[in-house]
Length: 148
Image (cartoon, rainbow, N blue to C red):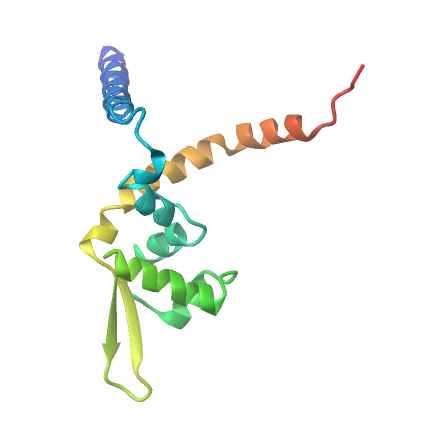
């Protein structure tokens, strides 16, 4: 019992320390133009509609283009191609072409791509834990209020 309480307090302190460090970094840029933020482009890219899905799909191992299309059926061919190219440009995904007829192309995560899996996992866990609360808040917000 005492050991469990120690873990809870240690975890809480660790989370508070992490929160403080994050907020200190954020607040050190207060007053700076947001458009000049050097990480904004990175955050915009990794938080778009398809990048996280592709990274997490490739986390299980290399895949060919058509396998990615099957694994993420609601992405268009054009958007899959575009997102893979952008992830490749950012150094998150590598593309290997095999000398076959027709040429086979395989996509895999680079070490940089692998490094984002755990942070994505934290975000996914948060979303899983909180989606009922978000659904409830949306329902309350979307319910017409009585003007009287």
